[in-house]
Amino acid sequence: MKVQFCHHLVCPQHTDKQIHLSLDTLHGTDNECVEGFLKCEKCQTLYPIIEGVAVVVKNFVKYSECRVTTFGNWLMNARTDKMRKFLKTIGGQITSEQAKVNRYEESGSWFGESLRRKWQLVCSVSMGPL
Image (cartoon, rainbow, N blue to C red):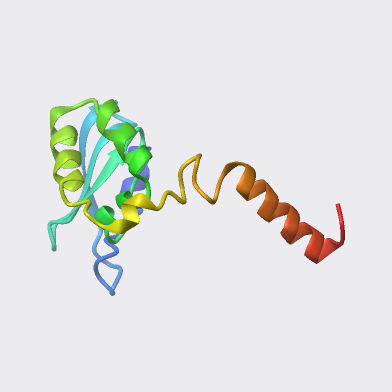
């Protein structure tokens, strides 16, 4: 994530959308954060930056429950102990049945052959047979 962009991000926990996030780079360069956290100083919520991508979602546990394979990859590929510890803490909170429903991974219902069939159906309904 480009460091210059982090100053434009706001905490989704607040309705006024005026609470900007501060950056804590764990791994990266002066211009790029590869791994780190965005933190809301008001509510103390941490949003991870993993592989250069800021994951700014209201509920990171629920987000992770729907992406257990990706979450496992994040944990295995974490570059710093602080990120590993954070992800292990989140992993300990994943208890929902939702974790068994794999919609967003490559083998999930939104990808692969299933997605191609759904796309063909949408196209054939809206534009006629392919």
